[in-house]
Image 1 (cartoon, one colour):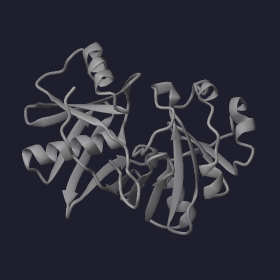
Image 2: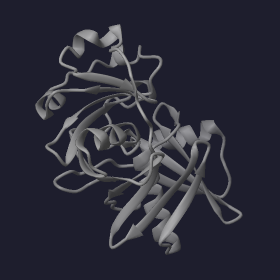
Image 3: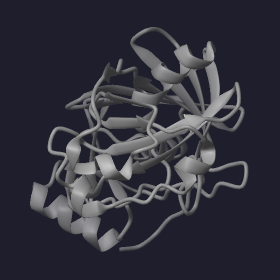
Image 4: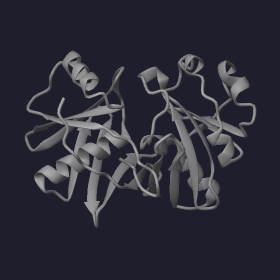
Length: 246
């Protein structure tokens, strides 16, 4: 998911269920699949419901897992779009002209201090703000690329789901890296939900409602992101489907 422009994206598993299994069974399937995230989908009274699990447990919102599930359901049922219901709100995925769109919430950040646990790792941060995640704005693309993570200390950031480092990429986009060791993801490959935190900030900084995003992970991730309203954004991305056995 989220591939393109020399970025191979982020894999996820998708399994459609007739009824919900226990959390323990869902976790066991996730571990057998061996992918960063597995999305579980159930259809009930014509509505699709979704949950996401990483190798360490259930997670509260997963962009690439939602896109993967949406692509799979759209293909299976020959739909133009699908709406997923989750504990954390509704997610709409659509396909048009070979490109998938995923609508996500927009989270306004609050300026904060860099936590003392990681202050020595982030001496070049020019700004810090928080949403569900802790975001550090760095001065350049190279400073994001060369950032040295420390999983043990990141796990001590109890108030945050993940740590994101980001920088502007010219006037039309931004770059990022995303670290979530508390949920078993040392560094994520391509993270849709990170844009809920990042895009509102960069829309304002770059004075644009449409931006290009590159995630500087080992495989790379690529997104287009647009502002719909103060409360929502839409991601534009590519997805490739293939069947696997577990």
